[in-house]
Amino acid sequence: MSDLVTGDAVVLGLRPARLPSRGLAILLDLVVYVTGYVLLSVGLALATASLDDAAQAAVGVASFLLLLVGVPIAVETLSHGRSLGKLACGLRVVRDDGGPIRFRHALVRGAMGVVELLLTFGTVACIASLVSARGRRVGDVFAGTLVVRERVPGARVMPVPPPPPWLAGRFTGLDLSAVPDGLWLAIRQYLTRMNQLDPQVGAAMAARLADDLVARTGAPAPAGVPAAAFLMAVVHERQSRDAAKAFRSAAAAAPAPAPAFAPAPAPAGYVPTPVPAPVATPVPTPAPYVAPAPVAPVEAPRAGGFAPPA
Image 1 (spheres, rainbow, N blue to C red):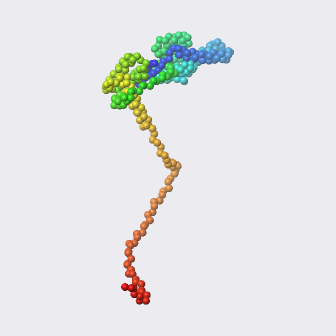
Image 2: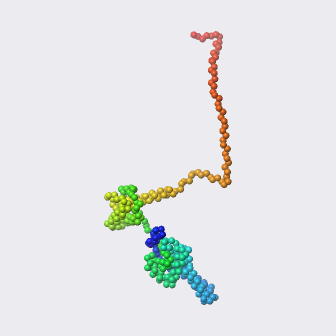
Image 3: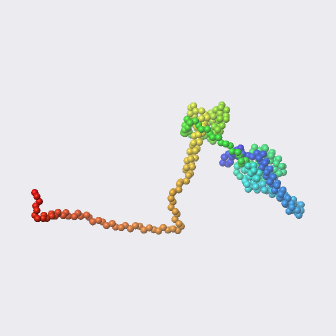
């Protein structure tokens, strides 16, 4: 892997293409270009049969420069470094900083390719690629480019074994901000491969990593806890914090739910009709209540002078 560093101090993990894959890609490109050149040369020879020798030679040189120099430059410029042969082999031409190439890069590569590929039958390009640490030919050095592999076999990521249950939640207050990414990567690689190591070598490596982790966190490891179990518990705590942080970020970025009912927008030019204010109707005041005068009872007359018995 190539340790290319951009202007932002970011290390690019690019895999430079080596001589066998590059040679196969160039061979495929040459087969296509030479076949087109031969077909074009035959057609031009038949079309210019009536011309003199000087004109035929000029047409031949022009066709050579067009198909074997101009077409590769145009293809690499338009495809951003992926010719037919490189596409078949999973290769790509990029700049030294990992960005896509432009016309000037393709022009320098094509001009130098005439010398180191066509005139010397690839001898100079093979020697330069073998000598270079990143497999670059002379045209790549002058153009500031690099041929990298795009199709890289993916490696299966082994999960980190869980910590013992009696260590769960014991490192919630541990400060992990000062632990660098390189140490986390070394701890993860050890935990995923510790069963494949010799017991003594694995124990010594776990103790060294645990000491580095304690020095970064500033908190000593609990007494009686094995170094490997301590590393598992701390890595599990970091994964739990990262998962909680990602969940909070996703919840904060989620849009607010839309209301169940939204009034329809008013059409353009609509003027609402004013509603008249209600008129207050006067309520009559009731008269004061006057109680009626009492009426004396009237005795009924007695018929026949009958007196009631005593």
